[in-house]
Image (tube, rainbow, N blue to C red; front, side, top):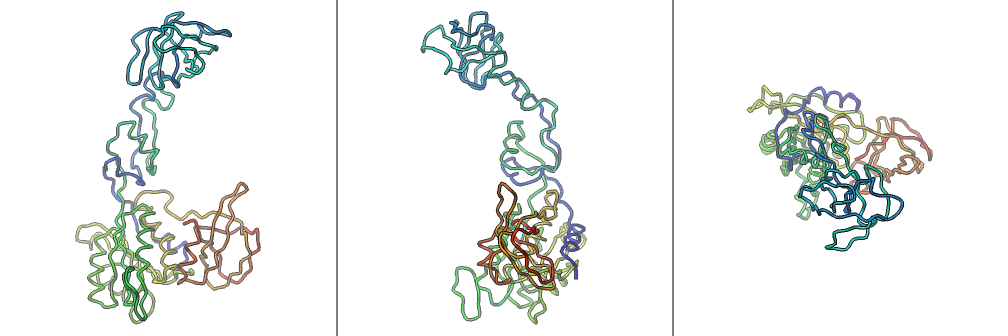
Amino acid sequence: MLSVEQAIAAILAEVEPRSPVDVELGDAIGLTLTADVVSDADSPPFDKSQMDGFAVRSADTGDSARSLQVVEEVTAGRVPQETVQPGTATRIMTGVRLPAGADAVVPIEQCDFTEGSDTVIVRCGVTSGTFVIPRGQSMSQGETVLRAGTRLFAPQLGLLAELGHAQVTVRPRPMVGVLATGDELVPIGQIPGEGQIRNSNQTMLTAQASQAGAAPQPLGIARDEREHLKSKISEGLECDVFCLSGGVSAGTRDLVPSELQAAGVREVFHKVEMKPGKPIWFGKLDAARAADGRPRWIFGLPGNPVSSMVCFELFVRTAIRRLTGIAPATPQPIRAKLVAEHQTRGDRPTFSPARLKRTDTGAVVHPIDWQGSFDLRATADANAMIRFPAGERVYAIGEQVTVHQW
């Protein structure tokens, strides 16, 4: 049986980043650049005003109020036509190009000016460069402004828009199929009968896939019957990543591993030394066995909801990050102090739901009162999970523990 670290390493060895594609800029949020982006111009492209006010020669201002002749008014989108000569000023708006001859801007609040007048009283002195944004202060032509591997969110998309990139080359968002298996499952809008439960795992896993940057594809429920499962597996193998929930343990109706094998999927590992989530299964449909020549990656997740959720966070998210070029692809736990005593026991490392909080003095974490892998209610109060090593031990308040954020 593999350790968690060995399982993650096996996933990384099997999953390769997807080939780059060009997408519209508005569709690139959350995706990863595959090439550096270089500015093709200075920004700003000219010296510009940082304030609404008057463009002046700093030499024309001083300790006492000075009267200057207003030679021009320049509003946004217009270009100054007049040169600021000694004893003159140009009324100017924020973002407008600084007129020739001027080297500073006096804010309107520090001036006495009447609309329609051809003079302005400047009440304060300014030095050269006051309230002027010089050309190229934000970025210079030829400067690398975004590196390959950068994940694109609102600030990066805004920068790309400023540079005129209507399209951008990224690693595409993988499609993640989610299939729940089990005769006991009913749709979430249906009242369960005797021995039945609602299909909560599909909603949970599709949400996790979306949060991980993938495009989830819910596939419904597969019954514990080979022909129906076979049909659903065929549908799921159209996706880049295929997650099945349930049917991977050792029960008589746990048919997922054998049906995946029958569909041409190669098993990479089955079972990991962890709690919850021990029965997890991972395999690959190699490119040579796929009809379209593209590989697929398949995760058989345990049916218990917390087990399924934990395995997604550790393993499926790693695969998605690898596919989309996010580095590092591996989980990045942090260290935090316990704020409550906690006792643990067991022969496997345990991932226990917890509430993580960041404070001025560092991260602190509170274990949630969690009853086991069926207890989805407890995870609703959690935003992380503490990894407790195997063995029996009481952890004291203030001890440092390893925490994985959700």
